[in-house]
Image (cartoon, rainbow, N blue to C red; front, side, top):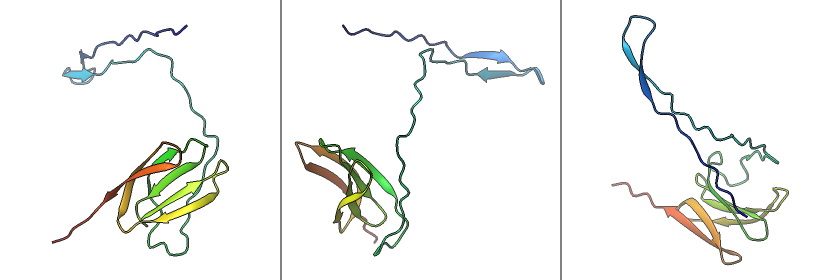
Length: 119
């Protein structure tokens, strides 16, 4: 049985400033739900590899249904596939800079690209 947790928000208000007697906006807007703390299970330092022109800059990631991770790296125009231990299992190069990736229907991926034109 699904339960719905209600949320209570306090409104923002104006309050007198202790110093100088000015009226100042005080944000008392609080979400009273319990916060969930996320702990990283693994991390990966991306280092420059052979053929890289710039430091790696990952702009999009998504999981394939089998647990592999697809990541697009904008600076060097790459998409790489990582296994569950974060080892590279595949690499694809683009002629344009990739921005985002989404995985769908098994092993299919859609990647958005940034085409830059300078006039």
